[in-house]
Image 1 (tube, helix red, strand yellow):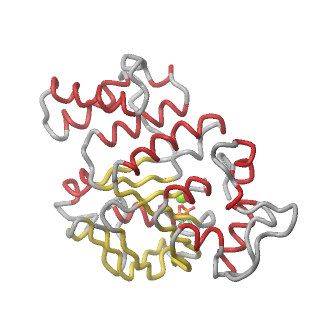
Image 2 (cartoon, helix red, strand yellow):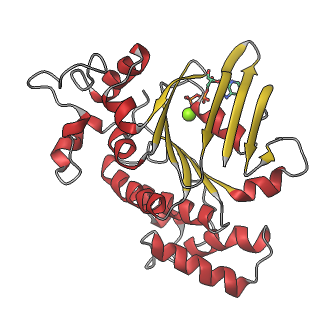
Length: 282
Ligand SMILES: Nc1ncnc2c1ncn2[C@@H]1O[C@H](COP(=O)(O)OP(=O)(O)O)[C@@H](O)[C@H]1O
Ligand SMILES: [Mg+2]
C-alpha cells in the first residue's frame, strides 16, 4: 500500500532523511517513534506529497508520489492526514467543517455530504455537537472533528502526526479511542506518537527513526519491550522512565520496583502514568 525505497531529503546542509526504506501493507497500523528532529514529520509529509524528497521513491497505492506532479491532488484525497494542531475553519460549524471537503473538492451533493458527515461525527462521538463552532469545543473534541473531516474524503490511508501531543492529558484518551476503533475497522494507518501504550496495543509494527534512518523496526513487543538497538533503548528509557526497558533482548524482566511496558494495563489508569508523555516534546 505504501512503498518507501531509499528516500533522502535535505534542507540546505541538514540531511533529514538518509535512505529510508519501509513498506506498509493494506490494513496495517504502523507507529513511527523517535526523538524530536529525527525526521518523523518530514517522512509523513513526503508520503502524502506535502514535501518533495530528493532521491529514492515513494509509491502509495501503486502510484508514484511526486509533490510537484499533476496527480498529487488526486493522491492526497486518498491519503488523509491529521496534525497536532487541528486547523478547523473557525467560522464554520462542526458539520460544515466535515462537509467542506466532500462538497468543494469531491463535488458531492450537499445532502449526501451532510448525511455522511452526520454518520462520521456520530462515529467519533460528536453527534450532539453538529452545530457547535470549533471554539466551543475542547481540544480533544476538535481533534475528533479533524479526524472526521479527514475520513469524510474516504481516504485509503490515514497519516497521524502526533495527534494527541497538543492536548491536555485528560483529553488524550478520547482521541486514542477513536483512532483505536479506526484501526479495528481495518484502516491502514501510520501514526507518529509518543503514546507508547497505544503503540503497544494497536500497532502491527513499530518503526524507530533516528537521525533520518529507520534504525529498528519490528512488531510492537519486539521494539518496545525488547529493543535490540542501544539508540532505541535510550529513547524508550527517556520516554518511559528508567527501568522500563530491558537491557538486552534476552534479558530477564525489569528489576524489582521498575515497571516494564508489559505491566502497564489499560484497565488500570494508574499504571499508564509512566507512558504518559502528551504535551511534552521528547
Ligand atoms: N521546512 C523546513 N525547512 C528547514 N528545515 C526543516 C523543515 N522542516 C523540518 N526541518 C528540519 O528537519 C529536521 C527534522 O524535522 P522533523 O521532520 O520535523 O522531525 P520530527 O518530526 O521527528 O521532530 C529538523 O532538524 C528540522 O529542523
Ligand atoms: Mg514532528
